[in-house]
Amino acid sequence: MNRYYQTLARIGFGLAAMAMLLWFLWPSSTWQFEPEPFFGFGVAFVVWAFSEFKLSEEVIYRASTPNDIRFGREIFAYGTWNFRELLKDHDYHRGIHPRFLTEASFLVSETELGIAHFQDKKVQKKYLDFADRLKAFVDYFGMHSSPERFGSVTLQSVIPANQFDEMNVAQHHQSEINEVNRLAAEAWKALVPLISEIKERIPEAFDEPIKGGWIRSPEE
Image (cartoon, rainbow, N blue to C red; front, side, top):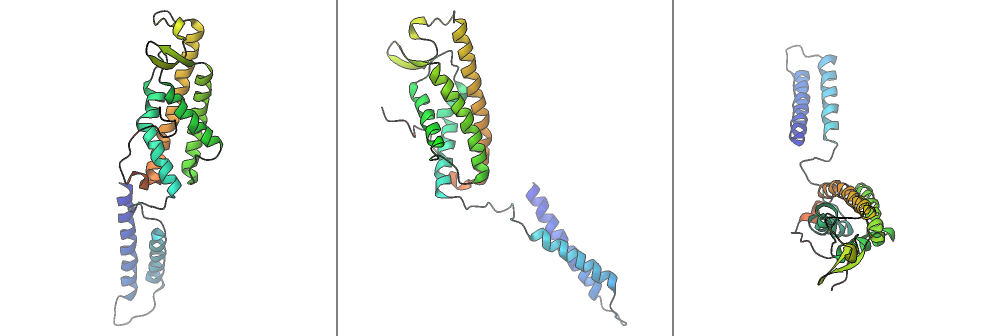
C-alpha cells in the first residue's frame, strides 16, 4: 500500500505547484508582481521536484547479474526441499540420508573458497550470516555422527547402529542430538530472511519455476 500512498503524494505535490502557479498568474486589471504567490509556487515546485527524484516502487528493479540469478534459484530450491528437511523438519534422534550432509558440506566449501556468493551486497550480507550458521551445523553434525547401516539403509546418525535404542538414549548422545537440532534450527532461521531478500532484490530468479533437487552432491 505504501507505493500507492507515495504516488498520491507526488500527484498532490504536483497539483499544489500548479495551484500556486495559477495564483501567481491569475489575471487582474492591475497586475503586479506579488512575492507571496511566487514564493508559494517556488516552494511547491521544489517539493514536487524532489518527490520525483527516486526509483518508483511501482516498478520492480531488474538488474541482477547472471550469477545472482543462478545462485538465488539454487538457494530457493534448497529452502523448498533439501535444507527444509535437513534444517527444519528432521529430528536427529533418527538418522538422515548422508547425501543431505554432503550437499550442505559442498555448499560450505564453495562459500569458503569464494565460489558460492552473491554480488548484490545486501543479499550477500544475509547469505554470509546463513553460511556461518550452516557451517556450524555441518561441522558439529559431521563430527558427532557417522554413516550407519540400519538394515538395508545407510543413514548419517548420531547414535551408532549397534547402540540404537529409541526408548533408552545414552546421555552423551542425547546432548549431541539436542545440539545438532539447535544448530539446525539456527541455520533455518537465517535461511528464511535470506530467501525473502532474494525475492526482493533478485526477482529475475523467479521468472521460471524452481524445482528442488541435488545440486552439488555427486549422483549415486
